[in-house]
Every structure is written in structure tokens, then in C-alpha cells.
Image 1 (cartoon, one colour):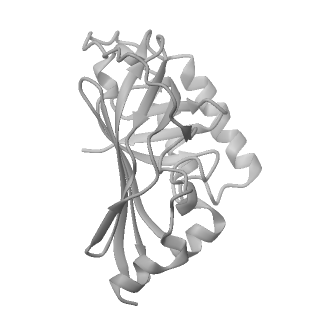
Image 2 (image 1 turned 90 degrees about the horizontal axis):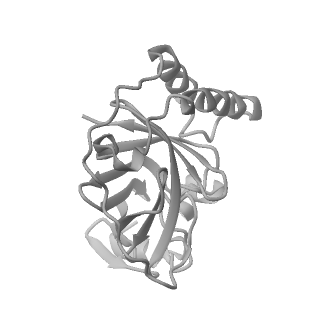
Length: 221
């Protein structure tokens, strides 16, 4: 199928789609004042390496959690709870949150990726990678790369990070940008997400969305 035909396909008319990598998505109504993250040094609190290795092994090869059975999700949640006991104080102020992260697990498949990660969406869009870049002091960039009908595509969002308290952040995203082949356009409007950082170190970051979705991020590079 040509690029123009792919762009005209009903599945690519995504004005009502949930933006990618969104633990909670709703229309943005009111802008909050920005509170920037401090680059204070993080205390030397680290979880046992076997706990970090355990949670990564449990999510590996599961298509970011999609293929896990119910008891598998519970096992991931149990390890995440143990890791949370080692979370540094005020993780939102730690430089550890910055960097390039890959989404390797979410307890709710549609929380990261929206329409692209529904059962129908996964049949049409083959997800290649789901990346979140957090740049100092307050920029977040989300990107879902996929292939569809033989064409390479991506959905990207840029957002502004606001600190709500010692563990919770809010990100206000601009309208998503969709690219398929040589075609690109924006759709939808501003949106916001809220995420609690429950653990972070040099290798992984764990987060929980406002509705309880558990995320596991793996640092890249």
C-alpha cells in the first residue's frame, strides 16, 4: 500500500486516540505553574542487584507485558513493591530521572501507546520500540515507533514536566505528531499525565500512573 493510502486508512484517523506512553490521558483544561527538578545528588541507596535483574527477567520477551498471564503480572508487581522499599528520598529531584528510557513493561497494555496498543492496534501496528527521553530541567519526549502496511511510522509527543510533590510528576503534552512514511501531521490537542516515581537507579525506573498502571523503564546507553 502506498504512503497516501496508508494515511487515508481509517485506522490512521486518530483524532480520538490516546497519546502514546500515557499512564492517564484526559483533555488538558488548566495549566499549572512549572516547578523544575533540582539536580541535587542522589543518596547512595540501591536495591540488591538480584531484585533489579528479577523484574527485568520477568518482563523480558512479553511484548511489554502483553503476553504475561495474570500471575505473571502479580509477580512483577510483587518485585516492584520490594524495589519500592529502596527508593531514594524525593526521586523527582534526582538527576537519575534524566536520560533515555525504554518502556519494557506496563500492567495495562493501552496505557503506553493508546490506540496503537489495543488488540486491534497491535494487529495493524507492529511496535518496534517505545522510548521516553527526560531532559533537564523539565522536558519529556515520548516516541512510539512502528511499522504499518510495510511503511515505517512513529508517534511523538513533547511535554513539560512539573513536580507535584516528592514522588509525583505531571507532564503536560503538546498535540501528538504522527509520521507514516514521508507523511506527517499533528492530531488531537494538549493532554496531561501524572506518574509516581516508585524507584529509580542507574539501570531502571519504576512508575505508577494515577489509575494504578505499573511501568518499568530500562535506561538506554
